[in-house]
Length: 140
Image (cartoon, rainbow, N blue to C red; front, side, top):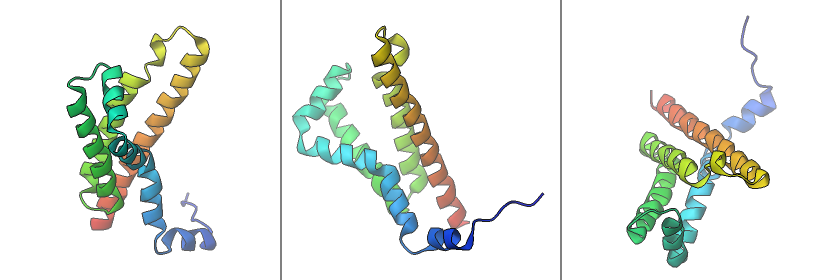
């Protein structure tokens, strides 16, 4: 059995200049948008860290901002993609466990919403893995 190929218009679109860059920008948008918002509202970033019991909250907020923006730039610019995607993926996994522990919630609506966020983040981690794989293949 042979693998199906994409129709020519789709293949052409996927190969078009800038499409991969747009994809990397979109993939990382939850991170760089969050990092920029935290940067411009640092008090809220500290409050968020404190809310989840992460101390010292100001240092955690700085680390999160640097990770979100720096990791995003690494993926977007295709420089050290494996490191940026890996850092964002590990961050997302940890944030998922801390911020979306749906299994601890008694309210069924809140549990459902957190479970949806948790599973969406798992998909985001998968996208970051694929971005790292594709970047490595382009170099090889």
